[in-house]
Length: 444
Image (cartoon, rainbow, N blue to C red):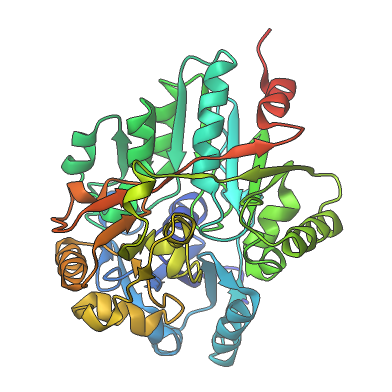
């Protein structure tokens, strides 16, 4: 390749890691020209542009975003030299099938590593990741926030992996300290599921698109920062203490998904979560896999006990179970905490909502057939939230069991009795997170 050749780049992503990779590596480097992003996983992301306010002076018109199905056409028509893979929670086989498409079309296939994409903070950072969506990473992050406060850090600020599904320019830096902040930013259900629990516990959480700007603003009010990772992506910030959560309900996935296996290999601490509801043999399998690839990691076992306000009200009822959306979709789980609660508290029947699903919710079942008999809390915009509400109220159930991290009744009108399922991380035995945090980051 000629020395003065400008590398023409296409970034394959899902409105998160892709924008961060662009911002940190390509935005100000004239040796590269990012021609386009492609998008997948998240509804209604393609067809937009990465705006000039974020793309910088080398891209005065911004950068178009196309569906990933256009990959081969874009490589040919735009003479793409390199495709950067920049999204998460996908099987290793999936990644290599995409690589095969790229190579067959004539371009290079490339990953960007942590050294190039992690930002350095002036404050200490604790990072929390997972090997799969739905492992319990967010509840672990919240537990760590509480423990750091207990250790004497008065100003603990969380920063969440991006979920910019609206106006990207307006979402460059988002700070959530009140419920009104979420209304002002027109957050989707998925975003609220991540931000609302922090606000409810009196904490501040940041998110957005430009994580350099987010980090600098967070540093101004933080004694320590907790990175709350999304999907099973790698942290965007360099960390002094990397905690990774694994899920024995999906044994073997810790070695089969990208970049979850990388997270596992990087971890200082591995939390084997949900040991209270997982099969013993699966717990042993996961622990063996952890030891095989990261023998120096400290292993913590933890439970995710479930709570409802009135367990007796569930007994004998025909119930509709609503679960966290990403856990059932790209997380590929067939059930979650709501299903466990319905079984544990003796519901007579779990009503299958699929015959009553409308429009985008029906389409979700077609795309993710693993979500059999339960309802994923999809809500990537006003229309989809309306579809979710109609599906809930169409389903002939005596009661709705809501296992999303937020109060879904604040967003949709549920015309049936309902029970919220709550679950928090609870370490079992020793060592505990508190002991490990005290040893690494404790204040005298």
